[in-house]
Structures are given as C-alpha cells and as structure tokens.
Image (cartoon, rainbow, N blue to C red; front, side, top):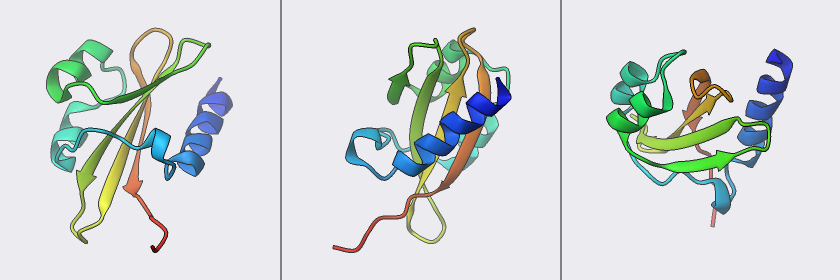
Length: 101
C-alpha cells in the first residue's frame, strides 16, 4: 500500500503543472504546515483551511491541493493525500514550475 501511495504522489507531481490540477486556494505555508499533520481528518483540515481542489479516486483515496506564496515570489503547491478512512496519509510541498511564455 505504501508503494501505491508513493506512486500516486509521484504521478500527481508529474501532472501538477497542468491546468486541470492547479490548486484553487492560496494559504500561508506556516498555516498549512501547522494544520496538516499525518492522522488529521478531512473535517479538521476543511475547518482550518476551507475547501480547495479535490481529486477523488475509485479506491476511496482523495487528494486535496492548496497553493502558498514562497519567499522567492513563486507559487508553492501543498498536496494532501487522504486514505479511504478519511485521514491524512501523506503530504508533499514544493514550488510550482511554469514554462516560459
């Protein structure tokens, strides 16, 4: 199961630059880091951060995505993986890289 979760996060990382998967809510990184802990429930995260982009999978897993401003002025992305039991299993964060126009 761990390898499946890792594969899911790697796949989402590869796709995160696509328009369909862009996070819709901007939240300070410190708030994200303090609020989202392994084992937190969906309701706890929703209450603290509000709704954002959600991807649901047939397996029952869900991924929620938020953005945050970085010190470099770029946009960061914070991805939360919820298991089928509705609790946080993994998180990933990093800067979003966009191709030049």
